Length: 131
Image 1 (tube, rainbow, N blue to C red):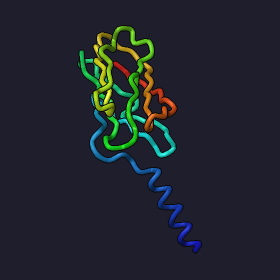
Image 2 (image 1 turned 30 degrees about the vertical axis):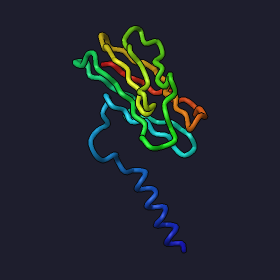
Image 3 (image 1 turned 60 degrees about the horizontal axis):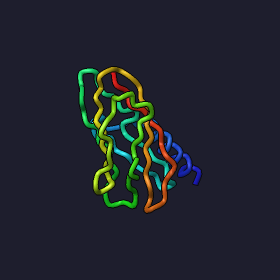
Image 4 (image 1 turned 90 degrees about the horizontal axis):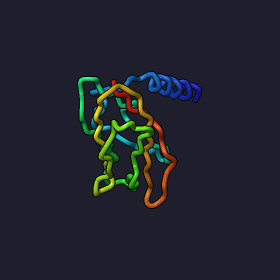
């Protein structure tokens, strides 16, 4: 029994140290997820846009087929300073799009708002960094 506990602890420790595999997350198509307890997260976080990219579309995606959806104001960018326009939720409520003019560098806090069924979940406040 003691060996099983030690093995389980070792596996847990190694999995915590494991690095992300696969290609880096696409900053133009961030993936939003919701844990079973209702915690919202996004990948990548922060969203980093290189300085040579102008007038780009960022589309946040929720997995389809689950009970989660964006609310009407599902992405709210704090102090957008004219850099973010045309923000809107898609007809299916599983994606949300904004145009990032990226005319100057800056860091922008934004809020992700999602609901489970008709119940709003606690919002999440990540960042967009325009290099």
